[in-house]
Length: 395
Image (cartoon, rainbow, N blue to C red; front, top):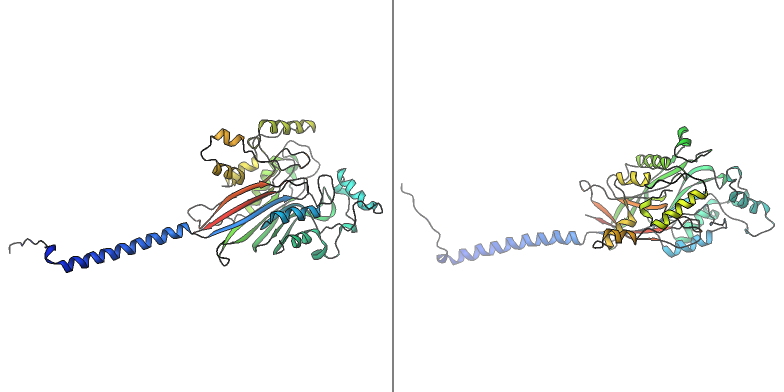
């Protein structure tokens, strides 16, 4: 049978052409609606905001060892953090006497002994011990006065510290948003810790490392939340090698919390490095070490290097890079060094840090971005507090 050539005559079937064109139009509209829907999701994905404040409060006293409770309340009320991480917290502790009361020699003697470096052998008397912890202790009073009483978590490290014996010394986290899966770990000193680093010492204090999952609520939908892991700690004050060991131990203990969600680590890490200082500031630090006959500090921080290897990024420098993408690297860096956080009566170095990371893209459904970083100028403690605003996004 001979093959028959067939060619569809479009002009002879106008109704068929109309139907085909209509079908094509409908299919194209469906595709475009789907694309626009996906684009809309990408643009309007849920945004969550969180203000984090980290603050070494110097055991409820300023650099001159004057009670700082009222000033702490004022500065924290002004900042209005969602989460407040505190270092050097005595708890339970209160001040039931006027520090200028000449009729209280035991009270004034305590502060004198602390200033003389005799705290480890100085017991705290009843003037500093609240009868009712939840109504009289400074920690609970601070939480209630600043609206951060949604969650009050205290992490004890030791009951014998620079600030006295018989009352626990550690860290605390106060929050106006819910906390979950709170974990506290005591980094107990080990025998070889005494010889880590170059500074002579007679003892090593235990330190606390804590982690908690924070629920951040969406800006436009209070029923929708995003989880964020916050780690906070206060590392050793003498040995960089011991600080590195401590931070790695802490991260290992809480790694299960921050594997699939964004994570922040903050606190008085007691570490600093040359790249965070201009030449004048670094020389001032070297002069301090020479004055005290301490070995010269390392130019690179082992702690910050270890955190970088674990994927953590410096909130300060990421914000600077975002603001100055088109600036020359040298100009950008030299004009934007982070403000020193220690000490308020002689600001020299940034040792209070906020670092963050998002999970790998392979498993990430949430991401985290710092949008502002600032040091708060206040003399309430011997450290300046650091405040970072974060924005989180859920896919």
